[in-house]
Amino acid sequence: MAQGFNGYIGIGQETTFGSGAAITDYVEALSESLSAEFDRYDYKNIIGTIAPPDDQAGVLRVGGEIAFAINPANVGRFLKGFFYTSSVTVVKSGFLFNNIFRSTADIHNATSLLPSYEVEVFRDVTSAHRYTGCVMNTFNVNVQPNNALAMTVGMIGRDTFLTQKGTPTYPGSPAKPFTFDTASLSIDGAATTLIETLDISGNNNLQGIPALNLSTRIAKLRRAGHQEINISGTIDFEDVGEYLDFINQTEKSMKLSVTKADSFQMVIDLPRVVYTAFPMGISGRDRVLVNFAGKAFYHSGSKTAIEVTLTTTNTY
Image (cartoon, rainbow, N blue to C red; front, top):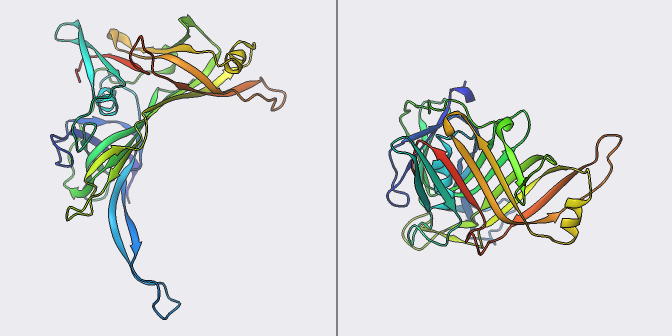
């Protein structure tokens, strides 16, 4: 009988797309949905019977999501995977560093536009599953009361196989994740208490491309569109200020900051945001809340649509 609590998830960066890698980091996850499935195609129609004809397995598609509470010691690997580039400044030599991640047009290489990883998932059944050529396609950061900050990362992979179960080693400093009670949000530089829940999400719009190369595995990754950065959440309808900003399509900046002891910190800066939806209604006798949505655009001064600064003991 397989039990989820007996499983583990590990990750390691590959040198080349799909080559595999040693597992270097383990994450105490909330859930995962990595899997493999085949495209299928028909090759006959007129067969003289009502029974369905045989078809053929085509390209293998690997992908899924990993959800976990954001710890300063584990989130950097995933941020580097999504954004690819980062810059590092020293806070305290040999101990504490600022890792700054931003939107960029830079590419890792012609095959894999972003760094690729091998992900190992043990599901409490004999062997562990290895997924190679995994690239971070999407992310979502969720902040809400009575919860740790949570991230969900969506991946596209290249191949999968079984391997011997390993032994996970989890971060010990800090041992616990960022939590809601150290989160602060500012709009246009001023602290606000109006927003009660917040999601910040990104989409690299990647797609796996097969080729005529003697293989059913994808050969490369390409973008199907622009990188997208979006926000959504719940806002207390105390006044019409944010509503008028939606009606007038007023651009604003948003900044989320979370901290832990020993100067661990994560700051997500969105320098240019516009509300795209602000639906209002009275559901009953309770408070009037608005489930808003918004979009972040490129800011010419900051030269990015989003900047994430992670202060931790690791560099990426």
